[in-house]
Length: 345
Image (cartoon, rainbow, N blue to C red; front, top):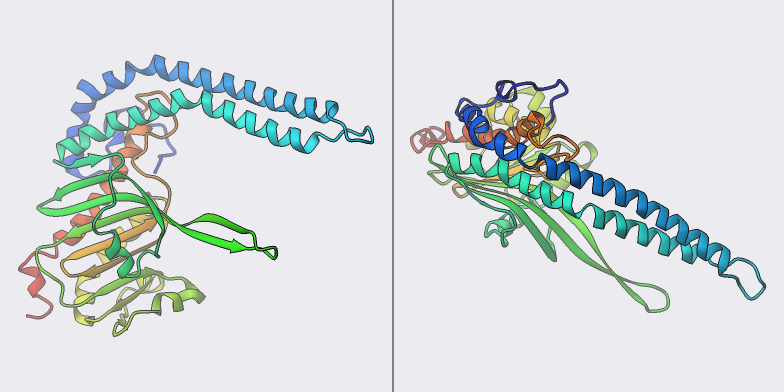
């Protein structure tokens, strides 16, 4: 989440982040900033190229529209090429703009890795830009956290451990294939996005006794959360703020209240804000927490119209990492093997 005020120093960029992120200040000065700054010339050239091709693309599109509109005539001699010219013109303009932006897009991906690699290596995490399907994805579906899908794309997978608590994070784009038939028997197939956002799996040291599910309160649509809960019962939260914000169902009321502390619920909302997402939801089953949040892509380099070593870009990336870590911390500090014996003695 970008700060509104200008960030002038790396220390300002690290303000409010967990203490173990302070290593980044020296790492930034010694290696990351010089590496980013060395590509500034490439960024400026790529921005100029994109802008030039955008102008050319628009001009080409207009020229094609006018050419077809004025020169292509019907049998009666009236201009008949405006629609076709408009279609071809828009297609040509978009193609030209996309071509011109390829260099900037490639540099954006390289910038992203320059920022992610130092953090992931410092915390002993593995990182994959485009992983295969994670094994836990079907568990998300069976728990009712995501709908069914026909094709999927995954990216930005982080695997590792936070304070000896293993976790896996990735972004998922799930689509459903839908086929319709018109009155003439012609079929049309479309792909509809059913989920796009972040998924987090945290593995704890001891299995839970029950299954607890947490949904964002949806007002009149709360019946959707109740659907398919089976033997689960609604859990009333002690804090009125969180009671209003969430719908909770569990097969073990005592355990659910023990897990869902005010600190955890606050960090759940904080993660939603940082991710600029919506409908955050999670489930506790077996010995794991499954969490997903619909929203924009995370762990991105941000606008490439900013300088390569822009500190706002750096802070946004670190905040994404910190939001994940703080949520895990809120759970792992409480759900130790000994502490988990608490609810049932």
